[in-house]
Length: 308
Image (cartoon, rainbow, N blue to C red; front, side, top):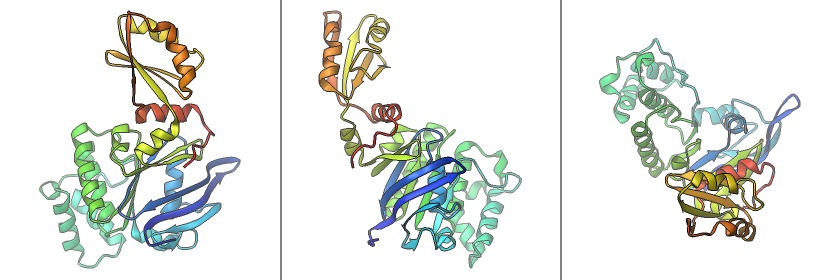
């Protein structure tokens, strides 16, 4: 592993009985990079993250996380990684301050009280420090969880759908904080279902049915999909959608406001499919395929690995 990578693993595999949850996944994430980890529920994202941070032992695979052997040095990795679980996992009958103090004790941090005070200040929690965690809104719970992940000054944060269930402003504030931390050199692997969040990442990795299908920048991932998308506007778009659905060459038919987006991986076949509907009733124009189009495309084509 070179010094530029915080994560550099190959062939990571985890089985539970006969079920393979993660199947020979390779991943590299550079230091200071925000890597979005995409995939539907049950695809293996959480299992992979837990293997990286030492909570699960891989059945196969090798590589390094923060310069430590991902198999042999799990205890060391745990102390240098911050992990935010998908579900709020702190003590709801303790205050914000008490929760952070407890986490600081777990890491045996020196100058614990000062460390907790600084953590409260950094994430704007000081005014609420005596509030019980169970009384917090989703956005404030998220902020507490992030403060707890950062209290031991980790070099890598592994966040499992951290913004699920929070309002748009809280999500925006959270991502502002993430970008500032990345600018300070922290590395992130963030599992998310939100395409607007994925577009904020430096690079993306998409996992489906336990296999990594594609990895790259947003532009690279979209280009690798080879999707072509046309937009139509006009009257009776619902009727048009029904006529296009299932035609050879048409993979997706999706309403977007007052337009209809029609996509497919074979440009010639798609154009042939829409040709009969190029009438004065509809106005057609080719538009760039979006990340959501690619997400759906990959979900509908499991097992077809996209070249990287």
